[in-house]
Image 1 (tube, rainbow, N blue to C red):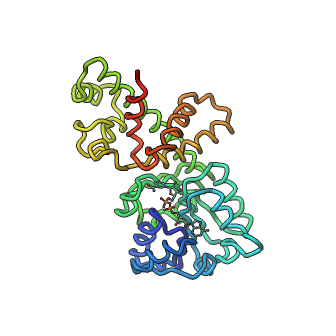
Image 2 (cartoon, rainbow, N blue to C red):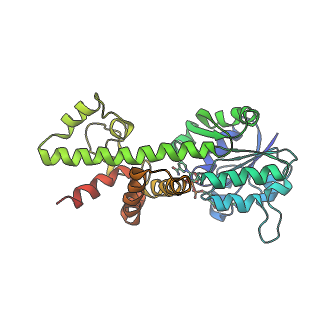
Image 3 (spheres, helix red, strand yellow):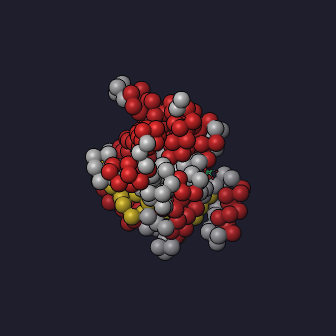
Length: 299
Ligand code: NAD
């Protein structure tokens, strides 16, 4: 089975390498000459164009930054044929990029109209998860297509969850990251409030991590140094999960909130807070560094 893997960036290249390690024929491509060079240096097989990579492929993975890039690559750009034109009839298109739910649904519709099958399969776990094949995949599409993709996704990840029909993998991702953003801000506010009240970081951690305030933002991504030695706070907020990426995901959440009319005040506020954070040095720092903004802005 020939597999095309397009988008060999921070996430795509290590994912594609793990897929190739299973023995499948995997051919990659990236529009960035630098990404192509890095992939070739790593011994990965790269075609000259995206359509060369996808020609006669039975499975086509994409791992791009935006939904527009996915839709452009699927369709035809400036009259040139896109990926849907050249892949094997009935090929399975699996988009792992984090994009809006409605863009993912458009991608499904385009693929199906061209006689192919499609899944949205965004990931969490970051570059480390991509390198170690420990990603979590959230998948939207039919039962049959999910089962066909499962062994391939399991070669790149540890958890593969079928979330429902078209777009629902992206829906799960956007909802999860909205919870994460809101809870990271809440944990940071609690630590700054505790500081002002004279409570030590360790005492607050010992109480909350064993009480109803317990959450990942506290017990894994603790925003102060000390209580969780592996959290980004102990290495000057080096990511982890960068503020720019959290802000991108909250932009998708904001879009979903607006299109559904949900009264998600906390989600919208988290978007506002992280959009300011990502305008400054927070863009390249871990998103738990929001605690420094809260501390600085407290009178
Ligand atoms: P990246 O910018 O490093 O890689 C994306 C690559 O896609 C780039 O190299 C770009 O040149 C390439 N590309 C764009 N259009 C293309 C086309 N038509 N054909 C071929 N290549 C094309 O981004 P990344 O960090 O690898 O993230 C990829 C996606 O995964 C994003 O949607 C991101 O939100 C999501 N994500 C990233 C992380 C992370 O920690 N980096 C974690 C979870 C999810």
